[in-house]
Image: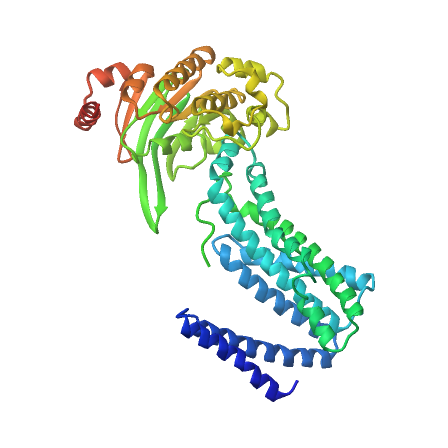
Length: 254
Length: 242
């Protein structure tokens, strides 16, 4: 793709800006910031990936993955920033998900152990885990607000902290997984996944691209379930104090 | 002494500001006694109950239950020793039987005699398989009391348990609570807005205002010869409203 083509693609940004102004949507500033950020971020990532691929050393890959997980954890932790150690709990969760999924992929030689594969697939897994962590925290907050009486009831009857929060935890895990499951149901029917589209545009055989996309679908399903479950179990003890009381105001809007 | 409060303080953070809810409460309730607690809304009555069940912890002072300071109790054991029934009679999703069995289920046990509890609180056994959330207000409160009784508590904390009910249901629940007290010698701390009820059922009555125990006396003396001017004004105001 030529530089001129990229410059021309800014026509779409101008179109969005014109529409926002015409309909007084007040989104002009957001559109500009988003586009500038996306341009800078992607350009930086492009150069970094170039460097990592050229470096061709495990340390480069590990550093890259670490940065990705740190940024994802930082982003998802905003929702529950009053929860003690929430950042580290999300960081540990995403790290476990990454290790388990890459462990299977590389251990069973499903994909080659090259930076190109490891980093690209990790990006999808980590990004997806970040979204699931966000959805989970959101839902957990809503469920606690709605069902606080049930938590107090179980505690007041001599139940444990885990017994009091378990039904709520289960609901929150389930709810945070629904968008992933629903999204995968219509895959290929409503829209072609970005990665598959990219491969086809780059000249890959569509069947080959589909096979690879299937791998990603299955991977994301497992990563999403793992994220919600691990985070749920790491997080719930922080919602209570040592006297087994529900601590209020653990959640804050980002 | 079954319950003893010594200089109890409690405050909460509300919108960034610390609000003192209890300011040095001293008082006690004997085994088998019914202590009625009255006072304006927001005076700290319900907070006293939640401290006794350790759903909240005092900031300062000592609180003895069954002769033992609450911080020395195993939390879960204390919560079985001191049962609490809430105003709304909250129910878990599930049947009446599942709700009634909840205290046992939480201990990994099964409830052998649900019918006994249903009969005791005046609920038909036929309701056992009904969804608990479908019950009427009065039925829910009966079930809530029965569920609390499954733990065989020595102390029962009642937070406005009849205030959401019609007068007939309220009277029936009141009679049920009195029989629980009589049959099991259960100590009862009963927060109520209904002064006539407090006078009818209490052995001892406390008047709480602005987080302070303004007056504590035998119920008879409290209502016939209140000593503190604030108590007199509160009783007069409440009677005038009627």
